[in-house]
Image (cartoon, rainbow, N blue to C red; front, side):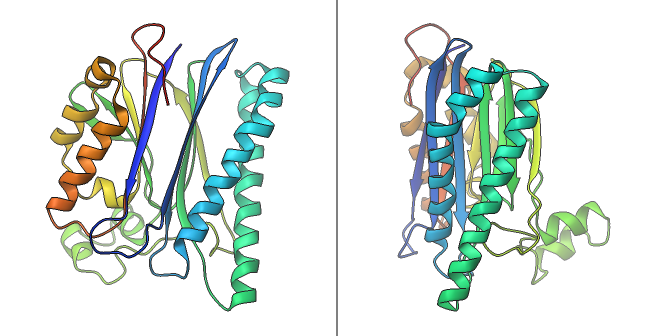
Length: 269
């Protein structure tokens, strides 16, 4: 399977610094294309969110280049052993970054943190690790469906039935994260996997992106047919970012999209 992938990020018209970071990597293997997408959203309420998000992206960039080839060579990019080993490796990467950022924060008398979603496609399967409120969507059949669950106060209270949507809309803690990389002493990343749908686009994004665009706009710009026809993933995402900013969206915004190519020679990152 060949893959088309790309990403875009903007700091927006208000904030002085873009605290989001992202990564898109693709490699050709005997099992077909393997692609990694990472979106990390530095916490604006903490210090140096851009340092935290960059640390997450840098760590997974190194993992993709140095560790994944050995993992794929030994286990073949598929099967229970691959998934189990991948989970352990990703857990170690995230925990190491978390510890490093916490130690840096102690030295500087500051707090650093980032939400992140890591998404890997290999041999017809996708793997996800998530911390915080960055999201993974599946765009297919004229809709977009959220595959991750926000690790926020609002999501927890609504799921438990303790607060109504109306109450949460005005609650002072509605946007509070339950955990983030760099500021959580007991970090518990969520990991799951699923079958990769070749007729869908997978979208990884920060909250500054998904809060500022509509489902119809995302489907129009990121439907598989639209991305395959032009192959301009970056331009499609850049357009959606611009739409959000015209509506007064003030946060940094980042998105990465990945879709199976219709034919050979279309894969690009």
